[in-house]
Amino acid sequence: MNGKMPEMDGWQATRLLRAKPENKNVPIFATIAMLQPSEIQRSIDAVCNDYIIKLFTADELLRRIRALIH
Image (cartoon, rainbow, N blue to C red; front, side, top):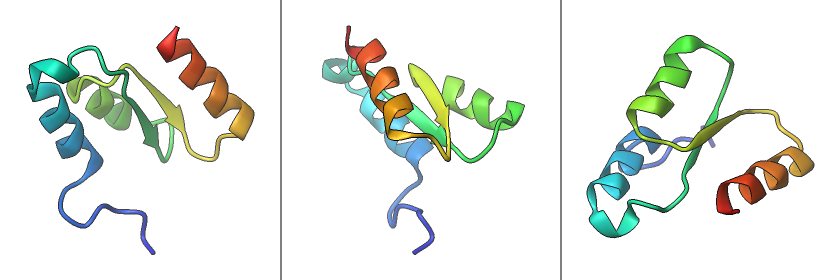
């Protein structure tokens, strides 16, 4: 399994979600493979609220999710 979505990538999915007014306040964060300016910029362009770099711990993921919903 390559970790890619079959119909579109995550950036396209995020843009489609953000295009709907009812999703305006839904928190979205990206999981990116490495800390590269181009990947961070893609998450900003897709209007993600935050990003997390892969290989993250469960504790880090939960902390970031809690920060987004509070």
